[in-house]
Length: 318
Image (tube, rainbow, N blue to C red; front, side, top):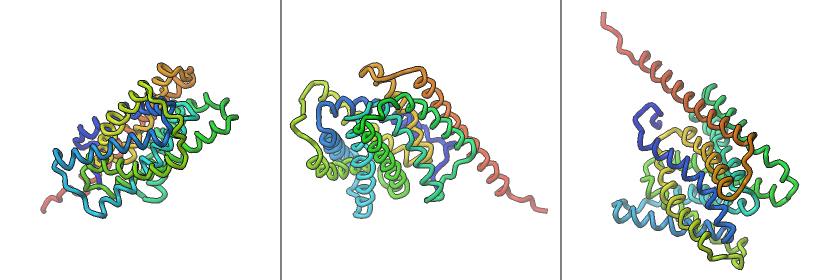
């Protein structure tokens, strides 16, 4: 059983906070990157550099040992689910949809996590307050989403939305997989292996779907690539792997509610993407939902600890 939020996991919370902010900025970097590189190639370069560099660092300076076959298989499965189909499909979709909208769709990830945990795995069941918080956050996301309805007549726009949902679900499945299968793996080495395996699976996708004649070696594109490799991949992916190892899965998945706030604001400031009053209200509702969910976990854990202390209290001898 994983430790509950009331325990001292300061580093894990800091790692989660970093993920909340950094991965919000990567939607912008992806949007810029795929306007200069074919989308699958952009992700391939990203993970093919970040993954092996992190693995090499952990095997040398980190003094980690090469994992066994079973661990490698688990890392490969999670890597393909999270990087090849999770992140990279979203990058492909951002050719057709805005970075803010992609982040908004990906914020539904906690809902997939809850549904999988409750209906299939029977694990980490939420209480009424947690469910209320998720609903409130999802309502905020829906309000943000409603501001883009006029563009639904474009079939490529709709395809981008569908592909983003597919990548989002794949990421949720991969996150649950590493939560259950990679508990004894060093999170830094695990992140590097996942990105490495994910990049290998991206090679046939890039060869099949990318148009290499569209490559533009511009300063803007290279900056986006360097940022997403160093910060968005090596730094943030490690933080995510560490947080998911130490904290409840449903709590970690709440990062997906912060990301669209960051992405929408940055898209508005830098790429002149849409930011209206309903979107701003939706952002406030989303943040309120996060607070309610975290409060729900606190109440749930406090109640469980109180009941345990009563049940296990030693009886006085007569």
